[in-house]
Length: 156
Length: 156
Image (cartoon, rainbow over all chains, first blue to last red; front, side):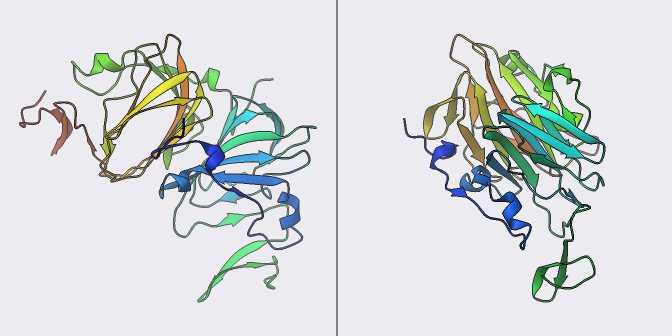
């Protein structure tokens, strides 16, 4: 049966690839595909994405957010969660939550041989920033908006 | 392997029953059990609960929120979503989203013979209220806080 809003079959939400990162970082998340379920339902307070990571792909650069909470719930496959404390393996039915402002950068890496799927939730709060301890990337802002910079200030 | 925060095995989060509804409404959600995953991870911007509905149970009184977005994703079993437009059946992998302020009341009912499980996400916004078109229940506020009232104003 075809569902009607507010109900949604995720399969009808378009699959998005790519990212806002400049190269060489964009390619690292090239194996990531997202379906924006929250947007498809008209939500604005938080985003909910159904994410698939191909073997070898990662969810994002390892990062933490200043103002936005994030939460992930693994639906299928096996993912390696990397944080400052090291690595943990999350399988289907396990989850993780990243409180805003906690300076513990995190991401998922799929080191398995099969695709892995998870739900990610993130609040949407004006003025949020993200920091990347492992990579030469900063988000800066001028009158024209946000731009990507090296950590010495040069623009990408 | 025992997971450490920010990762979490939902099985270690306490299971909560009961609700803030006065009787006779509280009993209607007696077959509902929640594990508060977002709280267990220290999140404050939104809540994430892993909810199990026993056969015959419902998620809540049918309601809509003034300021808070809500989202649900079915993990197992079969649930009937009831909205102003009628009923739809959601099985594992289907979802629904309820934008803040949309006056379309919703809830899940488990009419199947087996337990059903879903994730629910709700933003947390001061001043939010919820309305219940099918039931004689209002949330009102005085200097002492929020209280439950009949629709003619009498307190429960």
